[in-house]
Amino acid sequence: MEELLKALKSEDHDESAADKDKFPIHDPTRHWKLKKPKVGEKYESAKQFKECVTYYALANGYSIWFEVSSRKKMIAKCGQRPERVKDTKKGKTTKNVRYPPQQKDGQQNLCKWRCYPRWMKKEGSFQVISLDDVHTCSRNFKYGSLINYKWIGKEFGSRIRMNPDIKLFEIADLVMKKYKL
Image 1 (cartoon, one colour):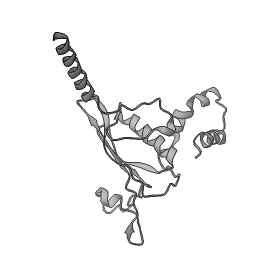
Image 2: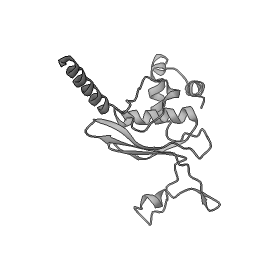
Image 3: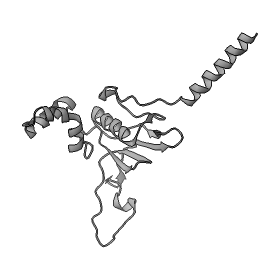
Image 4: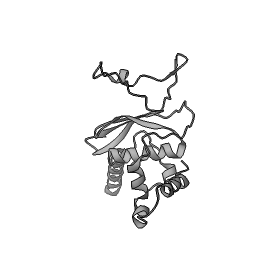
């Protein structure tokens, strides 16, 4: 009878540990074409989340930008980043005025893909709270600010250090061959 009680207690203990870790943890060693944000997925930092979203955009051909980007929360959206209003007379304006919705023929033409991660104090991780994973846009392969000199330096820094005389067009060819940009 005591053995049965011990077995039941150990099963209850295992289930409570499983409940604590019910959300997946992001695997940074996963191949770049398979990286995709998921609801509840935990990241070590905002930087790791940005890296995951960048690779997701590269693999699928979407133009994703970060509307809000801080250490505490982020908002990633699909589509080209709208132009800023360049009216110096207005001074500081609200986000709705700075980033007006893009419209065609009087109708809004915005993709519905949104990802909202936030820093969770108790878990000590950056976690995706909400994800609208439906793209209503077509793939356009215009990455905007996702692919910049910092990203290229991080990805191809070792090759550049091995060959410091490498030309700029050779680096561009390397990027185009590996990521088909």
